[in-house]
Image (tube, rainbow over all chains, first blue to last red; front, side, top):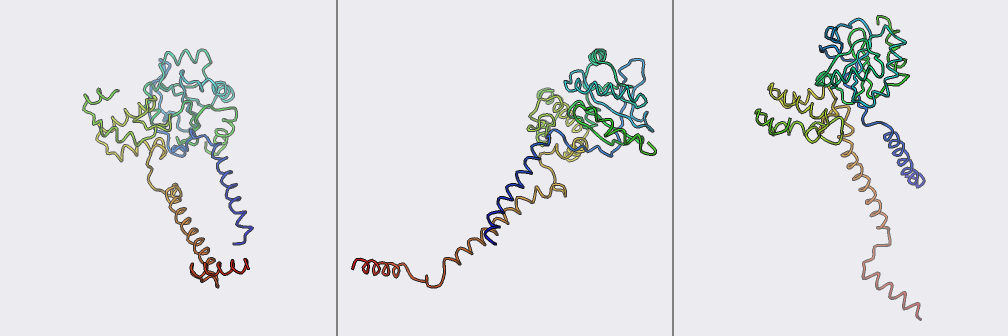
Amino acid sequence: MPSQLRVILPLVALVVLAVVFVFGLQTDPRKLPSVFIDKPAPAFELPALAQDQPPFAPGQLRGQVWLLNVFASWCAACVVEHPYLLDIAEQHPDLPLVGLAYKDAPSDTRNWLRQRGDPFTRIAVDRDGLVGIDYGVYGVPETFVIDASGVIRYKHVGPIDGSFFDTHVAPLLRAPGA
Amino acid sequence: MDTATLEQQGVDIERLREISSDLRCLVCQNQSIADSNAGLAIDLRNQVVKLMSEGRSDTEIKQYMVDRYGEFVLYDPPFSAANAALWVGPFLLVVLGVWVARRTIAARLAARHTPGDGLTAAQKKALEERYRASQSD
């Protein structure tokens, strides 16, 4: 090996490692690759928060693109994303936006929504969090994008922001047959 | 549910502990669901109890968790194409290191045995003495 190469090679290796580590530091270890992408949304049936409504089941929305937002009144980050949900509801009144009240007392959920506004078309009450487990929920809020054939196309962990709809929902609505 | 209550209900605590200490708590990632008291860890432990009472095997219970949370929940994930580099990488590095070390040592040994350096220690000593003697003259 020429002596120049011998000096440069460790330096190159160090730089490559440093770049890898810098990128590694920027990824959030709490963001996990979801196993649900391109899998059918698990079936469930849960009571609606509104007492005069029938229980909610995902099958009722077959044929439409819809959103499932997992939230709770005890969840601090849910407050952060709430204005964006209200925006989506206002700008896209035809898009079903289903709330899953996760491990929350219905009276607390109602109070919370009364204070902040209610963006949801339907709200299902997951009192003991079992549906949450079936959806692999581990950090509320989480938002699932489900297509017309009932397949989960995207899952977002943590609060959504203003770009969520355009990036992850709009393309599905434009797709033929959606 | 605490251990005493579970034991009264005839739950195999030992087995529950074994399975749940292999499962990572998603909320507090450096703890297993056996060690953590986070809400989700408790729910998942209860779910393990439920699956055990349904007569599912350890493998089935772990698969249940993997189906929902991905292989990340397993502290001891099985070998697969996706993680092959992580499993095999360290051994490859050791082999590479041994190979480099052997080459380097062989090269240095070869350099040490240059022609004309075939003198024994005694011969070298004699040579040095003669050199010093010639200097002091």
